[in-house]
Image (cartoon, rainbow, N blue to C red; front, top):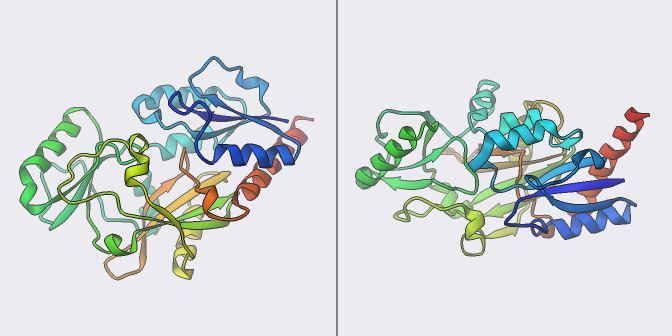
Length: 287
């Protein structure tokens, strides 16, 4: 069967995980190729289209979601992408009882916190995101005001200091089953100002290492996935230690997250096998 791995113009061959995934799919008898999501492709010619490194979607979210709705067989599906590409999904998860990083939505002013993060609800790779301290009220207020003036939903969150030593834990799931975890080093530094998209400066800012997830992290990851609409093919659950040391949800990535396949033996094969099961199910339904 034929699989398209959707990517963007900046990465015509896909991200660093793409070659391994294509190879594992070939070993299962399936042909896969990287294809620009906004290019002149015949999406109906593919048995399945998998969203991967579409890292420019946040600049054209409406166009991206219109494309997603037009693709006959998409993983993750358009309804999941619509929900997940606006970080207001965190409110749904919090209402379902998931512990999340406390968030002020569209505040009129700045919080009285020692350190905090300001970011838009639609963004990727930490773009337009900054960590501010209490003595940086001037530039922080300008940041907040600019995002609001652009009509963007603004999030303000306390900066949880434990992330500086522990980093983030990213849990990666394929078809609802835990595959592996990595440690993501913190990227928001005090005094660094507003950040460009991490995809533009990935080698300088993003430091990844394999990590063994704790039982508490795995339990929270499972709870998060139970609240997701549908059953996504892939999911990344990003956790950080809360004030009491227990993990809290920072983000749930269901659209185009890096899956760090190279940091866990067999991860690419597990993803290929999960995708192949979706292909088989789709073929049986089509008969």
